Amino acid sequence: MAALPLRSYPFPPTQNPTTKTHSLPNSKSIPLHSTTTPNRQSLSFDQAPPSFRHHLLSLRSSAMATATSDGGFDRAAAVKQFDESRTGVKGLVDVGIDEIPPMFRHNPDPLPPAPTGSVSVPTIDLSLPRGVVVDLIRAASHEWGFFQVINHGIPVSVIDGTLSAIRSFNELPPSDRSPYYSRSLTGGVSYSSNVDLYKSSAASWRDTIQVLMGPARPDPDRIPPVCRQEILAWDENVSQVGRALLELMSEGLGVGPHRLKELTIGDGKVMVCHYYPPCPEPDATMGVVTHTDPGALTVLVQDSTGGLQVKHVREDGECYWVDVEPVPGALVINVGDLLQIISNDEYKSVEHRAVVRSRDKSRVSIAVFFNPSKRGDTDFYGPLPELISDEKPAHYRNFTMTEFMGTFFSKQLSSKALVDHFKL
Ligand SMILES: O=C(O)CCC(=O)C(=O)O
Image (cartoon, rainbow, N blue to C red):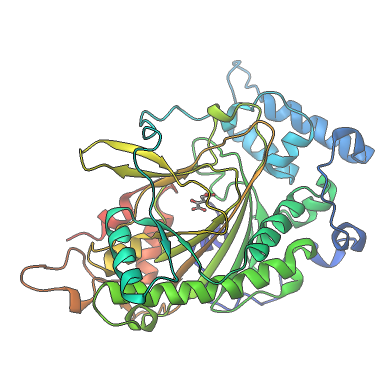
């Protein structure tokens, strides 16, 4: 992650993001025709306007090989040229590459996938009696840090429509997407590839729209029209589910239903809408590298492609990557670092990643990160006092959100060190 506005991922800023003084880049100059008519087709190279074709061709050659004078690979130059193309990873696919550029190559991960059918992330039916749901969520949050929920109240048609709107934006002609491309989150909305592009050692195969949804929403005009209504409605829907889950998880800690909400968790929200284009060499790259989520709670929806994997230590001590199998209509919930700390390790923040699965299919997922909106110098976070006793002393010290976020942004996205940093 680079410059300051970018540092909002996955924490919303404390200032009001509706300030209109900066980009969404050129938002006032985006031609109407490019945004009011959703184009649900991918653009082939031949269909691109001639000026853009030239741009795409130079992008292809520079992304494939950016040579240094000693014959080596100049990663910094490749990254810069890729970023300046302003069309993301999808822009590479649009020009028909048949191998991935070196800057996207990752080292293989030695951890094996779990044997098929041996273990699976729990799926919890929220329509079961409340006491049963609380117990199931408590157990899943403790053992897995991840679970899926069904019967959460969001219709499948809304889920499908939202995922499809995100896909539509990413499959607009490149010349229609690129005016939105920006690493700046000033204004509360950005579209770019790899939030940590300039920091990571290998880029990942994804493009992302980020929207800071709380405590204040951005000016809706900054969200691309082709997915605007869907993104705003998704925020409404997920916020309701998020609040309900926080109550259930609060009860699961034995501190009453409102304790976590009192900490303003649920009010600070960032939505990230990921698009993973089809990939000519899926096994050579990653969608999202191994990481834990720094905030309190994440609510994610994914399409039917699959690719999200959770690191899980089985009862026999073996550690595996376990697929979070797409369940139609389900939401994926996971505990973040902050909630692990607040719960004094009752709930676990678990490492996860997204692998790239398909040579010919794109994948869409939308994650909403919930964080406290109270960020003052006297607002301290740490293990809830109710959970601390002589038998169960505090595992972490208290800190302000300023210190917490500063620590997060000083590490790479893949780091697991945030929780350790505050350990006593
Ligand atoms: O796309 C996914 O399934 C995972 C996304 C994710 O882990 C993240 O945004 O932090």
